[in-house]
Amino acid sequence: MKKLFTAAGLSLAASPALAHHPLGGLPMETFTHGLASGVGHPLLGFDHMFFVLAMGIAAVFTGRKLLTPAAYIGAMLIGTALMYAGIAMPIAETVIVLSLIVLGGIILSGKALGTTAAIVIFATFGLFHGSAFGGTIAGQEGGVGGAVLLGYLIGLGVIQYLMAIAAGWIVTKLGATDATAINARLGGAMVAGVGIFLALEIVEGPLVALLAA
Image (cartoon, rainbow, N blue to C red; front, side):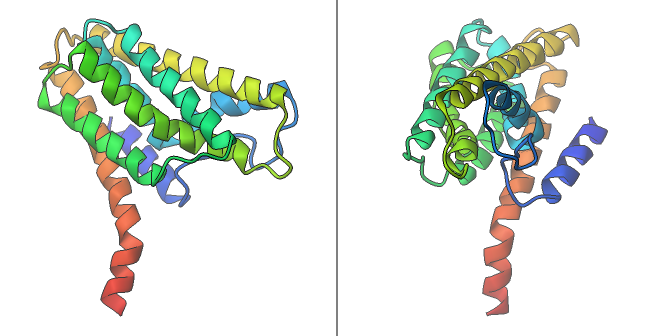
């Protein structure tokens, strides 16, 4: 766990951006390009990855471990499409950081979310994560075609749903039978810690500028 946290911190520190492009900045021109980018983006963006893994853990204890992550996927895809259409969610990066702290904190507390609460929380934050994903294709010079967009959306949806389900399955295999299990709560602590680290990264610049003024 310590190695995973260290790797996440180093990767985040290496780049100021919260979103990462798996094609290394190359233009996306085909369905395969879009699919590869959609699959790789959540894996390379640790902010997204940690949220999805935490969501999978929290979903297990709702009793609807397959349904509640789907609320995130649906909202995330809507947020991505809105951003592609030029409609951005406000302060998306800040809210994404907040999503890690909030969900990580909920898991750390040892309290299980009800189905309705989980759907609302997952879907709300999903819109903002989707907006960040949409920035990848919205920023492409000359735009992207429908095939690229379709591949991107499929890749995003499938990989994140599988990640969430896998996280829930793993935590139960490690012995977490309810939300109070130490294995689950440690996972929440790690996610919240990543969120706090990212929050400090956000406030560092303005704070240094204020102190230097």
